[in-house]
Length: 312
Picture (cartoon, rainbow, N blue to C red):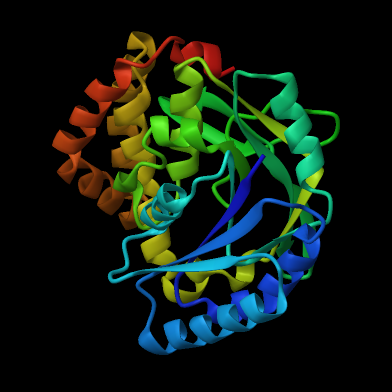
């Protein structure tokens, strides 16, 4: 049983310099495990630092660390997909550069895969460091309200079902990741890509799960998104990708009618409230409509379940 840890990097060599040694400690008891770091077009000086860091790790550790360098920055989905394509492992552990797993993270997840052949992936319990707070995340819930899919953090204790698994802390069967063409790069540079993948595989009849006993510490404030993108830019991308998700994935007639019915309300509300991020996100998504429609038609061929079966 082989496991590869896939870590995307964008100008975050300082994070990996600090976190890779801790990751090595957490996985040193496992055999057949390696780390694949995908640099997503970082600045030359960051790449140089990253090379030196990983060379030092390879000299001092038995765990192989492989560096893949992308010439241009594509975004989170592109970087992760590149790493998974390079892997030959049975499972891939998608891990953010600002995250570190706790020792023994893999056993509870492996047990779930052994018990359920229909399992696509398992999300870890995410101890999220947010300022001076530690918040337990990792399990997501969702509901439909006023024509929009809403998602939020779910209760952790004694719950294994989840609406999505995170692209920054989850273990997935590599062959199934490849079957579904991984994360959709239409969401680049970031956000909604893991929700989209989780949703597609569930509509195709596969299952996902949350594992409370597999823990990852996630230092969100140190990550590339908040460091390199302004707040308004991030918010616009989130809105854009939310629209893309609906137009690409929702096929239930009643839900789509609901979405279309409420759409003018949301746009008018945004105009009145001067929420220009939402308006910009809508028009940016609209520009991608032909691509969205093409992907929607391809995805529908794999679907076995209705939207209402997944959105509880």
